[in-house]
Amino acid sequence: MNFLRSERWSAVLLLVAAVLGLVLANVSFGPELVEMKNAHLDIPWLGLDLSLGHWASDGALAVFFFIVAVELKRELVIGELNSVSKAMLPAIAAIGGVVVPALIYIAFTAGGDTVDGWPIPTATDIAFALGVLAVFGKFIPTRVRVFLLALAVLDDLIAILIIAFFFTTDANLAFIGFGAIAIALFGAFSRLLKPRSAWILSRRPQWPIALVLWVLAALAWYFIYQSGVHATIAGVALGFVMARRPGGRSVHALEPFSNGVILPLFALSAAMVPVPQVTPSELDPAFWGILVGLPVGKIIGITLIGGLGALIVRRRTGAPITIGDLAMVGTLGGIGFTVSLLMNELAFAGDVDVANEGVLAVLLGSGVAIVLSGIAVTARSRQYRRQGAASGPGGPFSR
Image (cartoon, rainbow, N blue to C red; front, side, top):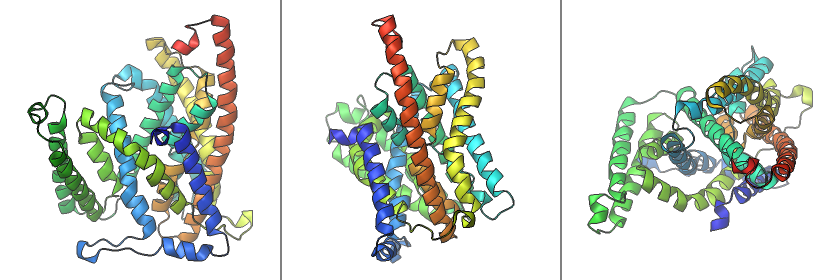
């Protein structure tokens, strides 16, 4: 199971699943598979009416966002975002990597019906970006890896806020209240599993608490789904309120399932769209906004805005991140993939044709970013290798 925790293998599985989904949708029996994906597996007595595809995006993907939230909380408490000085540069770069792609998208779609899809190219797939860095960046210093992680985590936080505020319709306050109660109880019960809690010190079995947490998590997801807020937000909230130590253990247990089943299943489902039989001139402007916004917007936003931020931060903290590092991270930031596919699904839920074009744009834009980042990371890694050889042990790789 350990290989499923590997950043490299998780990226490979995601890519294979997405390519497989696209291929399957465009073979002779593709329409039947797409129809099967859109078939509803509902539970009437609970008021749940979801297609198989939506069970993947609204249901299973909540586990992925739970893991993201736990890791984000750790970074905010004891990691690389636990002080303003540490968080300032990745925050500035992350904002640049959100604003510029959104502006590029708006430039393509201004005045059209699809301008509301601007959040799609703003996301970064943290698992994929770290996977590419792991494959090609053997000699990249730890400080640059940590910077990428911090930026990607903040990018995910922005994506979570966008989903919560821009893709929520007709919110039901009663269900939100019930969800908040379930989430608060989840956080309270999780503290019984802390190493020095009275429950643990008295050597009581842990499985009853674990069972209660699973029930509360399911109730929280159900109430948030019924409230009109996107159900993945339940996973985010549960991750934030869970006690840190039990949260870390939960992530360790869930990570193989998330990397090996949930994310590939979502990528397979989201990428299962027929290739539009149209000429390039007939494609919706949203297609071009996403295709250009992801690889180009991220490079420009992270490099330029992050570079300006580095000038300010360096004066205060002596931050060692260089413009070359920022450009490399910018290429990695263009890999939108999982979160961009989710936002595309939410933004164009009422227009199947544009949604299909959006999926292709996300895959192509992320594909371009993967190629560019592979080249950039390899070149940067070789440069650091030469610097390391020149400076000897304890050189740039120790920072």
